[in-house]
Image (cartoon, rainbow, N blue to C red; front, top):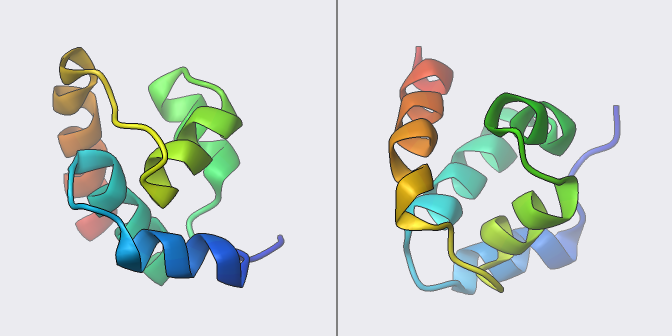
Length: 75
């Protein structure tokens, strides 16, 4: 398994907070793979990277699934 690049880590830390960035910070700290996030949320890996880096914000309709995944990962 590959880890997160320094570019993604730094972009995540500098990004304006939203659920996608929050999920990214958690996944980075847990080394939870982007591919698994994409699969669980039924989105592309590129969309996950864009959320994590703050380049894009998730649609409000995705917030419940994102919060559910955040809670799952915290357990």
